[in-house]
Image (tube, rainbow, N blue to C red; front, side, top):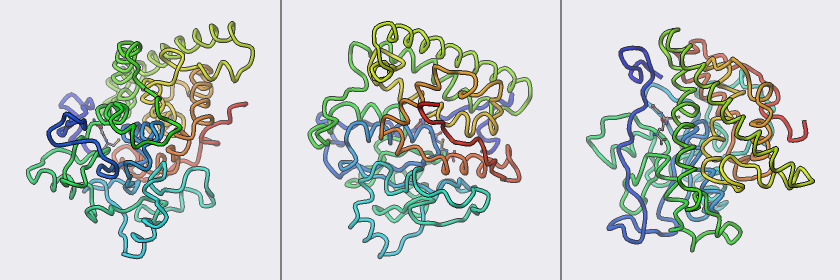
Length: 369
Ligand SMILES: N[C@@H](CCC(=O)N[C@@H](CS)C(=O)NCC(=O)O)C(=O)O
């Protein structure tokens, strides 16, 4: 992260996404289709992570393919791994793009080598990232320039790409997840998830209200804390993040107590234990991607260390572990190696030596701890 993201007073400002189209039967250009659209993501990025979870929850893994950039963000932005014809063919044969995380080995796989031994130019195919089978792009920026040769902003993930017209539909995660949820792809989706609506109309205004303060104060709040360029801004932001975690904790505590008075078993409680209403919604997806990164990265790297989720927020901690351990769409899209390596090795202004802390251990505790 360079100073380009900071304003003159030293506070962090996130740019507005440039491509903001949707896919729908009524859209003049972007019509729903199977296999036409593609997601480019980083497994480290909380905004891209929203799109991966939504894609999996909606049963769209065989409808929309995924490429994963290398976890290391360098001065030229995100890059893909180089691929020869053999690996492209193998990936196609094994349908890797249709997996929940785009062919990357999940966190549950062998973690034999400590993070410290992995160089930034490590190129383990399907471990450090994947390639781009559509345009054979080397960098994410190649795709942005194909979509708009005059593009002059940052090359961010996620990108929802149209393989037919070779252009970007949207690079705004909030919008991409609404498109994936909208039902336009339901007829192509896996049977098991048809009908799951992450933004049901009766909860929509509550979801929007929850998302809006969570975005400013928690999702983006940790970035404003971590990228603050002076102590005064840092101190204001870090206190604000924790005040809003307290607010989420109070909401979840109340929900838990109501459910506990109604249901006997923990499983019955957990199947209704969500932030808005008694069903899984977009509000949970959007909060999860920050909370799951909190103890492994934000506490230390972004100095959000007034407390941790595991030690200070029992109700958020239970909600987090419920999503992670009981829902494949959350667990298989969460890659703690990409998360830890990316932040600690890419933000040289914050961590100039690029040494990745080994803890906390484990990355996430078990549900019964
Ligand atoms: N508004 C965007 C923000 C996405 C974003 O900021 N992505 C970061 C990674 S977490 C990125 O790709 N940064 C690359 C760069 O700044 O070069 C969204 O939610 O989709």
